[in-house]
Image: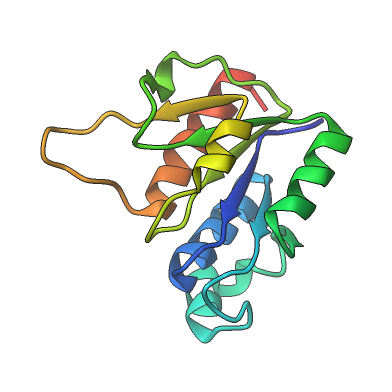
Amino acid sequence: MTKPAIALYQPDIPGNTGSILRLGACLGIEVHVIGPAGFDMSDRNLKRAGMDYLELAALTNHVSFDTFEGWRKKTGRRLVLSTTKAALPYLDFAYRTDDILLFGRESAGVPESVHALADARVVIPMQPGARSLNLALSAAILASEALRQTRT
């Protein structure tokens, strides 16, 4: 059975990526890392955050967004971008099992060209004055809701 997947656009912080790989391993969902990452994927902080779950993680590395996008189009999966620029709260979106939940760089999000390619954009509503959540927390929130809705 297909489950929603997580994709990270050029992640900056190895600890966040390691935590998301651990999340993917525990929930049985794929994690796609779209390069170039801001760190070496063999980084010790990545390994510390992922602990011994990295071997269980279904990780796919894509050398560029173009490579990822070619794969995504070939597989027909829907791209759902998590962004503070969206108007639609993540709880009001109808997730599907073929969704790829895309998260941008911790330092800069995703470029406008990637925004334009997203099939949907969702936001995690926050209190006024709050800028953003930690990337791993955001991934856990959206992945949990997508799995809850799809019952996968």
